[in-house]
Image (cartoon, rainbow, N blue to C red; front, side, top):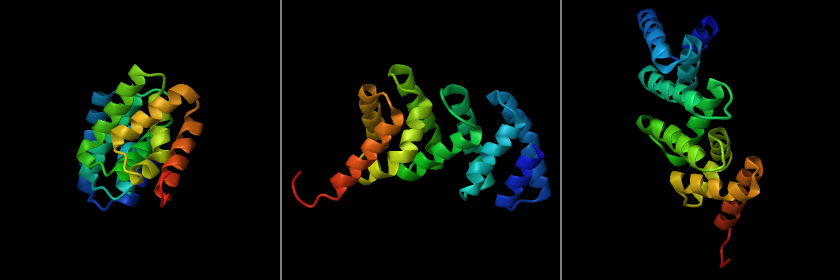
Length: 175
């Protein structure tokens, strides 16, 4: 917990009183989210590192903790936060809509033969290329899911989608 708070202090510029209040709220948030205070602080720090203010980072951190609870095949809370950040940046998803990412990945993994963690990793890998090729967030998740149903290897699927999207964008004539 001390290390996580030290990391959070490095990437934010708040008063001691604000940090004390944050830490006190973190205990309540951890209890509500079924996590630890360390994970709450780590998740918040991950988003603060990306330039979000403490209040936004707290809400985004809650989304990462929720993802940890409902997604399958995910790594640490910091890695989960990073995959949410990747999707937000790739598809221009606003901070207040971050739970949409958690919900979509979870709903798709509950309905198809793909894990939430694999979707998150694939969107972190290929999301920017798919968005640049004109695909929305939902379209990209659907493309990945449909392709992965056949290939059954999320890494190869993500690489294939990224390559296809890049080649389509670089085509000056007809395909």
